[in-house]
Image (cartoon, rainbow, N blue to C red):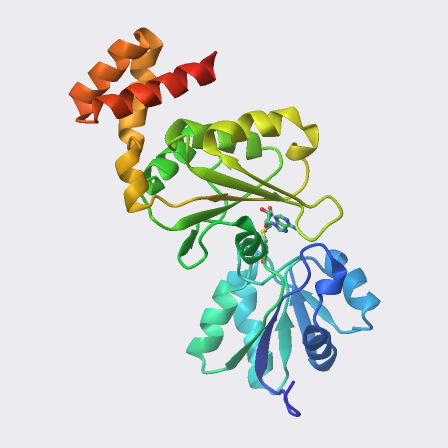
Length: 286
Ligand code: SAM
């Protein structure tokens, strides 16, 4: 914390579950600023008070951030300092703050990040999936057709894919993944990170739905879902998402052998590859 923090906008990460993840620096910065903007003052006040942070709080959420941001930054220009926090984790990561930060940079104000917990980074680091290149997609769309369209557009992406998902949609999302992604692709479901019931499920796409269905607890809490990217070698060994889709449709009408042969004819997939995939799909149905 600078001795004279005037005119600075701090972006301060708060814990995503385990309160011990609140950093010393985060607490010191929050104790030092003139005021704190948060999503919901009723949610943040108890956490802040527990750490001796007694500051004026102002609400900044998705419904007022376009209009309120400018007024908050006026106060910084008059010499005050402020911190932005979210309900949990890092501000702006699927949370409010983007208009505020963009405007602050446009006005030439100093923006200082105070890093800490972030669910996508925590999940990625523990997933066992490659972390060198990844794509964070936030929350998938709410309808299955839009979700599948998104997944299809990502099926050949070589990067690790990361999604946030809510407890009441996680099973449907995994079902859509199983429809679109090759069955051998690795999926990781990271639940309740840093909390008492933290669970990290690592399995093949083809097995995820049954694992989650078998354990009622797997549909409770907060989730990050990660998908292994398509590696060049793997894409050669697997059907593409489009080939898989054609095969699945044909399997509804024909035998494994005929569906595989027709898929190979229609899409140019290797016959043996289509046959192996058809066997796995038929197996999953039974
Ligand atoms: N800003 C937050 C961050 O830095 O991760 C994310 C906020 S977003 C509104 C909330 C979503 O993040 C949840 O629905 C869930 O998908 C994910 N999430 C947050 N905390 C989590 C946790 N402890 N375990 C797993 N996922 C979590």
